[in-house]
Image 1 (spheres, rainbow, N blue to C red):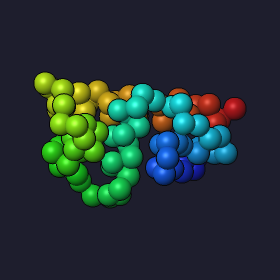
Image 2: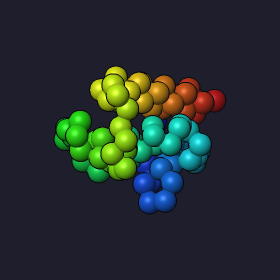
Image 3: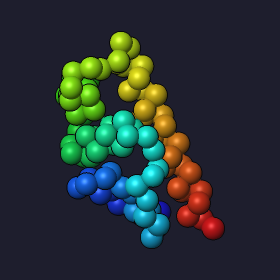
Image 4: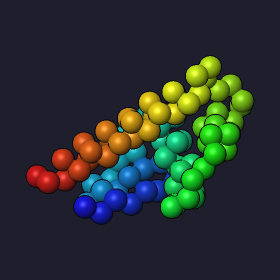
Amino acid sequence: MDIVLGILGETALLIDGSFGAEWGRPKERAVLAALATMPGKSMSIDTLSDWVWPDGEEPANLVSTLHTHVGRIRNSLKRWKRRSKF
């Protein structure tokens, strides 16, 4: 399975020829776009927070919220993977 991520404009995924920008919620797309700027490297929670909540209004439980978004991103990618098998 090939996955291509587009981050100019909407954060969109091209997976095995199927293109879509509706794969997740805006904050989930922001998390993936931020992480994609540093492939293969870690990103601090503070830096990730600045990308996803640039207005500084991050949630009270930031780490838990980020874990939730990452879980949803993984689930979205799994759904695309299952869909591409047909």
